[in-house]
Image 1 (spheres, one colour):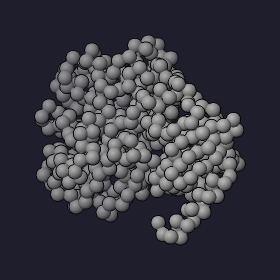
Image 2 (spheres, rainbow, N blue to C red):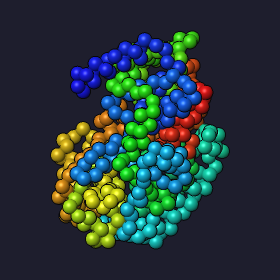
Image 3 (cartoon, rainbow, N blue to C red):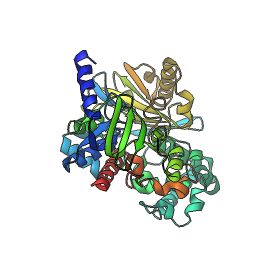
Image 4 (spheres, helix red, strand yellow):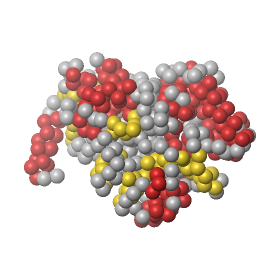
Length: 459
């Protein structure tokens, strides 16, 4: 930051602290910016506070080689109408995710390829996997999206982990591991960490297990030209944002809220918290939150993900008839896709370290992690994967203003005991963020829904 920029920032900070805003939004991700724009268009005096030096939250787009790549959220799929409309309005074009060719499965120490959406893991394993997908879909349809704790038998469903359900209902190790790999890919957690009721709610929220897992017709169908962060960058042009304002404390009075940040104090009549519950739990609330809300913030950890992108001179995997999609039960890379540019000028693979594997590698030597990632890619796609022209990874667990990725999840017992307060205001404080969405919870579309809902509450 130049001296002139620093001086302007200081002047803006002083101006912000010498007035009472109608609304302050904490967090300049897609949810917070959506809420801020809606309120500003309604005539409210709105300020967005962001701890980072950028907007976008869990989206992060950077130039690598000849393309802008996404180190955070990057996909859009069918029925995600809110983000679709927003991209069209902001002039952010999309393109189809490459998925032609056979997929790779690394399971039980054996690497094989397959076509279709469900790998062949032996007749019994395949049949049981298909039956499990059908059964989970049927169970998910019983979950009310606006109140999953009211599901018939909710306490029994919430009192067990997904892993516990799998052990009771899936007889083959192949079908159990297939569902475990899908869980890591969708939640970035292990099945042992996830409430079965929360799992069913999430599936219902996104249209079912297959829609969440698929490319064509699924949540990974399209990408954004120029990166997903562009949505937040263009929204931020329409509202007032203060950067490097990490919120440390909130003091509520009868009339307003005093917000303590690293860059000074800001006062507002209302506050929207558009950050994950795990981050809100780090804030000092001078007037304690209701006990149920406090418990909720303590009990919704983030998923664990490290995202890695390797660029190559040519798409050697396509030369072998492979799509770039891969699943592995041993890692460190658990999930892969083709991450080439929309115009075909750059060829790349993206890999994800997820759940316990991500936790095993977070904070470790970058060169050692790079070598392990490339070894995984080589096992799936061939020795050419060891020689990228460019490589980068993003350790979301080590990111202090994210504390993980993709989304906050509920372990057993949380949904039915304190989940009902997820969207309830606390005095002058309202709650946004994709974790509070009812449809496409955990996704960009859910972030927009949550921002719109929080703004509507205030209006």
